[in-house]
Image (cartoon, rainbow, N blue to C red; front, side, top):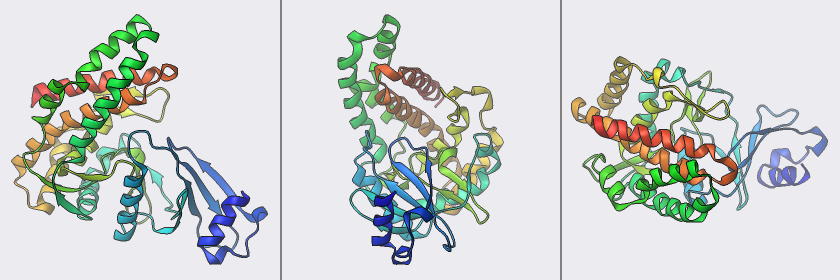
Length: 314
């Protein structure tokens, strides 16, 4: 606690008269970083103190750069101080959406995603393509490392998922990329856990994977997330809870109207990107797998089956 307070005082002068005994610190659950809510007497609102962890699949510089862009845009928490090992952020008082609320807030989120995408635009290779290439190589190495130490059933799972690491797999999933090199500032993980509902608005938070990508990726990801319950352990898959087609169409239509897209073209791109986000999800889970958390292979296999489902539909 002493080191946290010292770092806060160095960055926020108004905390200079606060003692360690006066602080109330609450630790939040996070996959990679250590995240603390810090409250102090006579301060109008708490702050967030984030200690950087090692992000296994993304260079940490990308997340830091993305955070600063969102902070400067006013669409995310303000940066109150940053150093090499930690960051101090504005605290947003809100609650994360539930999985089923994704349908209830779809119209509003179409607008929020649209605004998020306007933070930056660019051209070139999409983050989707770069992540698939990088994560494919990582998973290929992991297969070779672990395959002989697993049960026969797990070895079969690894072999089933090996397709994700092949040139054939990349060529196949590439067919579902939108046919454009125009990119937008994409969150790349629009899960209900990363959407805060405050008294003012909806906030998209946590920018670990944020980078320039296709506009349809975030739209497809948002629709897709209603199928997966992450607030239980291990996760649950709910194919019966697919977002209604009427809600999906309204969501895509609102985004399209705000950004000048021909609706039919945008809808087709989102449908194709449903395959892409599941391919990415399968690779993500496969790379999170270790012998002590084999359930990630089950998640990877479901995401791969969902990729196959949408690749056959498209």
